[in-house]
Image (tube, rainbow, N blue to C red; front, side, top):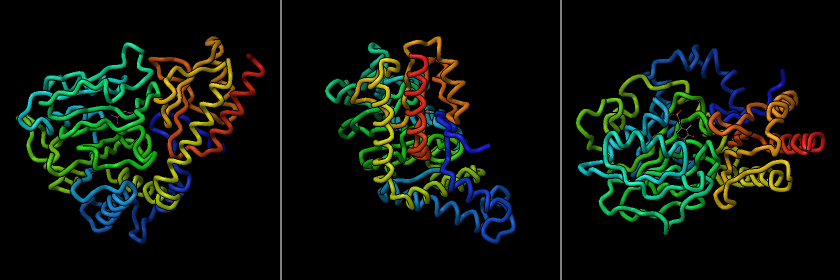
Length: 360
Ligand SMILES: *Cc1c(COP(=O)(O)O)cnc(C)c1O
């Protein structure tokens, strides 16, 4: 079967070139006579793969020297606990901005370790917008401020980086990392599960300003301690070696394709095409405020929800898959990360127009 345009929110599409390279190197990586999966993480082959991946990520994201890059496991969800464990540093309070489902999960976990001040919430509007800077109720004594720049489920994205003064800003960038350039120096911590825009599931990346590392709350497991991870170059235990390698191939693919600036141009254009198709029709709708619409996750509904199943079935037949909306919301969701080619958007838009013509 031909490869499909896979609109999954994650695990998501990977660039075809990357998959082909991994395939070519599967049985024998670079004359080693073995697959990357079979290598010791302490051997010089894997050490070189690991170091190169980090160097490429640093280059692509322009990560300043006073930040550590950690390659961890446990998903973004483990970081919901690790963050307060590592960042409270003698304080007892943290500010959280609540813009949807992933914010809520981060908040619920943080409440096990500290007082959580909800600096802003958009639940009143059913999470279809982002709060403005002036709506943020930040506390002077907060250890950090946490937010979710892109809420993957409802497709809501901050159009700006909150200003938190001297209080470290922490961002769950799982579904928008690498989609455009960002100023890393504005953040205390950036973290992301890999399975959306980095590589396969099982790898989690944490980018942390060095001065925030070193003090953990009592009882912090070694595996959740950033100091231990940093001191051991993310190899305190066996790291997710194959995911690390594949992420490295993705970073090289980004470099080869013009870096984050080129990714941003393409992503903005892809999203604009899809939103234009939705807004230009009375048959499809997206409830998110225009300025807070995600470039990466585009949920939409049909005015006739009784046609949802037909839409999904027919889309699948023409190679447009995994368009079903999150189970909590219904409707559709097209996740269009870096690896989704523009041709995939064009095919989806054409299918939507044709579907509307036949059923609208
Ligand atoms: C997918 C996602 C998560 C959860 O990631 P896991 O790696 O599965 O734990 C957390 N936050 C956001 C914004 C996500 O998109």
